[in-house]
Length: 453
Image (tube, rainbow, N blue to C red):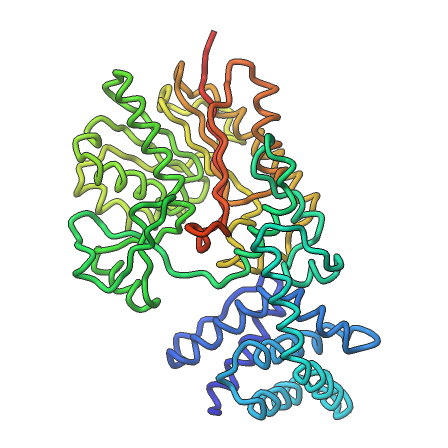
């Protein structure tokens, strides 16, 4: 192995032991080294509880934090990166442990732990696969809770808060486990092609998704970045595209009711991906619809607007879209927002993000029941703060990239109980794990219609 590859291991260690898992700038490294760094960091986080479960079964007492991270990093490589020879993993472990000033006894101990687990690799993965197969069939597994936590990277009580809908509580355990099993799978690179770009002219494949009809899969990151730079494609997950499709349907529904101008207020617009995704969906259906839409995207972070102005606004201008981006905090501002009443107020609210575990496995280690309650409280406050901007018979839409009952079902029911004039007309969850949606993120959509007195 080269010196640069060894430096990658140290960079991995520094990232994983940093307070917020902040990734290093490895622009000076070769592409294969950057790829290895990302693979190890993401993989260790995704399999964190599983790795700890294996270590805990091999020692009398869990090692000190620094040694535990070294074991996690190199155990992940032994179990999941077959292309790296065993002797190379042990050699690099010894080098990193020496740099970190491990004693000879500590290095010998670490070597022994890794060796013992590696010897049982085949049995470990057979047990793991049997367990995941049960989950994917939607049946409540009979394994012990500790192993459930290890495999799914989430506390058991949090997993069981996953709901499909209030009407299907009897199917909760099976569907919850099936969804979490799907989220353990490695994510793929998903986006869509801009209008007038033919599928056969670029290196992508249709996902043939029932949730996101325009979704395509990129073969690798380099192709994805090239197509985006050439303004031929855009990066957007299947779940987010699904939400954009839903918003476009409500826009078309308002137009069909005779409304000549549709005003949309999008809150939590971020970098503008959902803005662009919704306009793209409408453009693909009928470019003339865009002439009837006045869109205001809002976020609290000025940095998000900078990205929007640099990247998202260009295609919107080509389509002659009527749009604007503003910085505003609806929870803190005491003044009214001067956009007027909107036909659709769409809130992409702060949430736990548990629906995106395949892309962001680091989330799992930060989720607690208390955090879920605090997020749900903020979601209800946000809904109440913007409800006055919805026209009579207009729609108030809440979208979340999570699957927990606390944030999804409980939130919409709490808002409904506080606002008699808002009727919950749609409540949908995009479940990973079904045959046609096994690669998607988990996503929730709650739609209210305002019937003012």
